[in-house]
Each structure stands twice: as C-alpha cells, then as structure tokens.
Amino acid sequence: MGEGQETGHIPVLLAEVLAAARVQPGRRWIDGTFGRGGHTRALLEQGALVLGLDQDEEAEEAARALKARWPETFEFKRRNFKELKTCSIEHGWDWVDGVLLDLGVSSPQLETAERGFSLRSEGPLDMRMDQSRGRTAADLVNELPEKELSKIFYENGGEREANRVARVLVARRQRAPFRSTTDLAGVVAEALPHRRATGIHPATKVFQALRIAVNGEEEALLAALPQAVEIMQPGGVLAVISFHSGEDRVVKHFLRDRSSPWLDTPQRPNTLPNPQQHLRDVKRYLPTEEELVQNPRARSARLRVAIRNEESL
Ligand SMILES: C[S@@+](CC[C@H](N)C(=O)[O-])C[C@H]1O[C@@H](n2cnc3c(N)ncnc32)[C@H](O)[C@@H]1O
Image 1: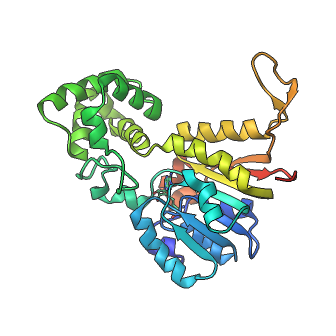
Image 2: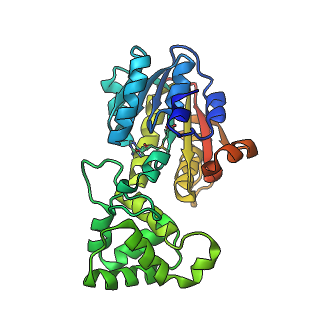
C-alpha cells in the first residue's frame, strides 16, 4: 500500500499520469505540487529522480518519509512552483524529463478545519497554503473594497450573484469583521436563500474564489507553465491536473498556444508560423467511472498532457 493510501489521500488520475509520463529509471521529474506525495511516490517507485515542491509546511513533513525511503532519488523544497526554473537549477538540473502539476488544495488541507478552507467545519478564515506569509481570506473579506470582492467572486469563482454577495458582506463587516469559515459561509447562504435547495452549499463558489485570490493561484500557474516548457528536454512530458474550469482554461489555452503551428491573431488568422510551437501531442484525460467510485473527489479533475518538441533548447 502506498503512502498516499496510508494517509487517506488518493492521488487523482494516477494511472493516466503514469501512462503519459512513460517513466524510465533515472528520468528527472519535478512534481510541483507534492501535497502528500501520492504522485511522487509512484514516480519514485518507477525509478524516476524526483524533485518535489510544495509551499505547505505539512507537505514538508510528509516529504520526510519519502526522503527516508529514497534518499538518493528524492529531494523536497518548500517553495512556490512559480519558481520552478530556479528550483530546478538550484537542484543542479538545467533540464528535466517531466513536470507534473496537480493543482489546488490537497484533501488533508481541505479536511483540517484550522486551515480555513472548509465551509462546513468551523475554523479561522485563513486559506493560505503557505501560512508563513501573505494575506488571509479574512484580510481580504474584511478589507477589500466591495467592487474588488465582487470581481474576485465573479472572475475566480464564476459566482453570478457576485455583486449581491459582496454588498451583503461589506454591510455585515461594518458591524463585526469576519473571523471564521462558518460565519462567512452562513452569511453568504443568507444572502442567497434561493440557492439552498440545490444541494450545493451557496458559499461554494465564494470560498473557491477567495482561495484562488489568497494564494495567487492563477498568477502562479501562468508563471510556471512557460518555465516548465523552457526546462523540459525534447520528448519531455508536461502533465497538469486541474479541478475547476478557470484553471483548466488557462492550461488549455497555454497548450494550444504552444502547440499550434500558426500564430492565430484576429488580424492575420493562420498565416504566420508560430515561433513558440514548443509542444506536440496535446491530450486530455478524465477520470474513469472506476476511479470515481473509489474517489468521488476526482469528479471535476481533468488531466492535460503535452510533449516537448524535438528541437534543441
Ligand atoms: C492537489 S494537491 C497535490 C496532491 C499530490 N499530487 C499528492 O498526490 O499527494 C496540491 C498541492 O499543491 C500545493 N500547491 C498549490 N499551489 C502551489 C504553488 N503555487 N506552489 C507550491 N505548491 C502549491 C498545495 O499546497 C497542495 O499541497
């Protein structure tokens, strides 16, 4: 039984990642979202050399067990994957064979009430993956202007009633600032009473939106994808798992822009060759029914994979 299973964490789309990765002993992989090491462990078991990155302190603790078992082939750095290239070079790797990003939060992060990600368990309104720095969700909810909050809810969460929610939160915080997850979830639910019947908590999108803003998730992804392509050697594999449509869109557009033979500008569609056609064989995978039975949390997961072109770096 793998470490992932021992800690109750099941790595998502693992079979698909391994099939796409075509790992061979000695191949260099960066797992930019180590989490509890589910994917890393599987790569190590296949003989890969793995550099694991994660900004979460608890991920660092989980990494110790893997380091004890694979002292020669595994290394962990507690870093943000937006520094992917720097981390790789610091590790002595100026090129790699593969990069994996399994985006978002891990199940243990979600399940630990004190981390503030869960709208159902009472905890401080924190939501920082890296708790050593940055503004918490409470800081944003209590301090940002109404318009900015509304923009975050709409753009990061796809919350169609973003204006209404922001207005209600700003009115409430003037009386008492938000401190806890369940307090915020309750006030959002009151602002959207017509949503209660849907079975999905009315604050789901607001919580997702705040988490993305607190952790600068889109900026980190936009920064990491070109770095991954830059350090991958020809034939290298880029694999990205996303969990919501916003981040999947970023990945999809990036892969399209880097694999298309033509520069597709509105002024001159498909007339200029794309000087950044660095990727090929772009593919998308969804969880199988079998995986969904074992791990219902995989439901919204999408894996996108591409191969680095053969040209020299
Ligand atoms: C979905 S979990 C990964 C689970 C992992 N694949 C496993 O099998 O255990 C995502 C992890 O990525 C980390 N993470 C998210 N964004 C990050 C970033 N920009 N830099 C570093 N770590 C990040 C989170 O802290 C979390 O531990």
